[in-house]
Length: 215
Image (cartoon, rainbow, N blue to C red; front, side):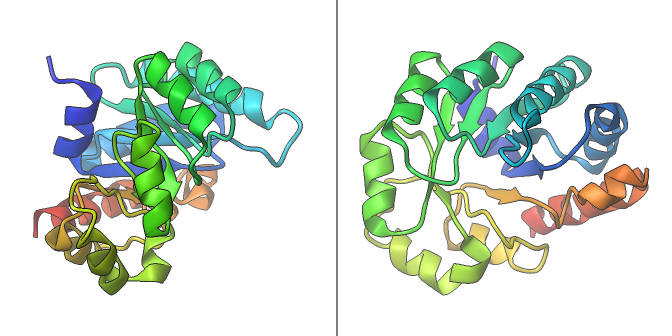
């Protein structure tokens, strides 16, 4: 049986579900699966009083509905406590926008895969020293492929997952340059489309990214 890290590398694409209500989960999973997506990150909502609980409910629902079809992780994890709660809800990997040693340590203690976010060479190497399995280069779209190539040159031992501003147009460039995968947010899972029931548009976006990853 393939492990979480191997599955992430094989799948290449991690769809980022941000601001998605629990009731949208079943049709969202169907749209993603039909579109060829196998990995989904549910991001913690720190903007509302009940945001963390709603996120955990969404992770539980997605884990149950997508069993055997979707590999679910938690994103925007800012504390070791959130990592533990995500694990209890069914998450298999933890993604953060920053490098937090405590979050990485708790993630690894619980047997999950760690993908902290980093931008500079110092942050990227520190993430690995803390135990990260992969490093989320963020914000990749703003930094550009040329920056990624420059940072990868001395850090080829790190598996990078560029995230932020990834499109079907620049995805092949990042992968060709050496990225092991990519995280894709609103360009794939548009929260407005989900609220309006336009899951066919999400499915179409998924297909475009899957095709782009093969180029």
